[in-house]
Length: 384
Image (cartoon, helix red, strand yellow):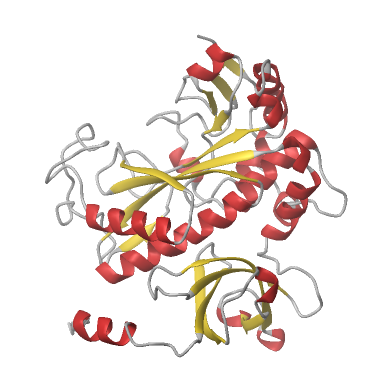
């Protein structure tokens, strides 16, 4: 069988060219979300550094090559919505996060940001804060978790979570590089740690207000893929990358409103639990593909088909921090979303459930209109 020769990067030559002056021009890397929940990007030259996102020009791409448009009407337009310093090209170069739109002026079918942003703006008075915990797994070129014996398994879980030392953690250099890249790009990354399964890590983004959290989480995912690319390592956000007695990967979502943060806020958290219970089926429909393999009731997950909540209970659908319960105010953690879920859908769905729908902007109509599996949404509450 023929083998492919590995590509060897010449770092010295690369640095030589990256250090060349750009004569006042700016390189903008336009980033968007494709039909599979991945990121795509391409570059363009700008005459000057933009003072605001409104100065960034619209662009377009071939949507038939990304699963976002048919071949006979393939132009999909990129509308900039946020930009960040570029940690790869440095200088005044930027990364530009974009929404996708069709030529008839409607959002692309995979543009979940637009309606979520409308919901956030409509309910801005509630002052939503979000913080998301992104778990992921590092794979080698053959798709096996990094550091695992070829075709085999490491020792059982136990020493890996927040571990230190060879044989306990893998690819820390990638994690550190991604952390620094996020800080340089002004992403509100608030921490990182090794997770329970070896070769699995987590980082946290937030707290951020409104749509800004999902914007930053998407850009952090782009940065993670780009950093890992330079090490020849693959990133997977699969919620259950390895079957069996191994932890899955989630996107735990921390949520707080102004009312929840004020004295007596626990009452509003409890009211939120009732509303989340009522729409459990709809939430699970948008909380990530393959999530049922992760949410088995084991490995710090709740059952996929039942809604539960409790104080300090990591086996519940929603956990309330014990300190919040004791203070009577704070936030709640929705532990149901899978690691591959779309943060626009997660945060938008939560706002819609807690505050009501906005006419003409049913965030998840194109998903929720499909058949939802019947789930048992009986609530069981564990108290301290």
